[in-house]
Image (cartoon, rainbow, N blue to C red):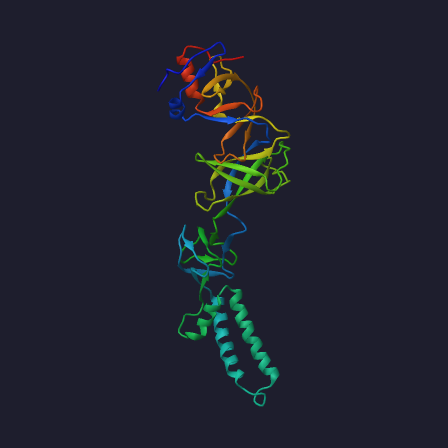
Length: 354
């Protein structure tokens, strides 16, 4: 690293060469007053999207015969999930076979042979038998097979996926008797997930629908937005739940994960703020930044810190800090400040400037 172009002056300025600036990747930002986002923290948990999840359960007490999926599988709409057996389904299938055969027979008869009233009664019995099987969860294809294959075992039926998704739960075992309505499989489209954040009851900030938030988990950041804010306080935790939605098209998030949620709330008035990478400590512990006063010439200025903020236009989603002690239009070093401080220290002067 070159040091030949460095010099000190009575105003404690330091000059760097173009080579040094490029090697240290020093970047400068012209500060302006603008509306930023205050950050409100809350713990949160990733949960399934209730609008895109599907709970699979038998509609009548049944015994598990065969599983067709396992936990974590991606399934398509119409794909077989689990095969079951039910005595009542067997009775309904037998009744359907009889009703179907009778309806097929009378359709070809003329009114001279059979009255309209009798024909209508037979048709009604056929429709009722079909509806009963559909009520038990049999698909149209499964119902059609009952009459096409008379050797098929009565009482067996298969539940299929009503939508595509991931298998998040498969809580059943072969041979197990399942009660009607018991959930045995949960399917969910995980391209979008929900987050439930818990806000302290003492926090009075109003979080409107659409409020942006930043999620932090395993050193990665994600953007989310509020879709529902509860007004009731949980009696046990003394918190109110705020629900958010987050894009998960890369499938890096999963239900059950705990996340740190930072809600971004507009400041009441424009402020001067900098990325935290611009801030360094002086030798006496005060906060300061480096300002470019001329081309490649820098000077340290002491600043005072305010609230931690977020800049919604910052694609890196870094934390920003409100600062006082700067004026609009000054060019402040936002990356490489530590390098400048090190070079200043090597030059033998204190960068602390009042």
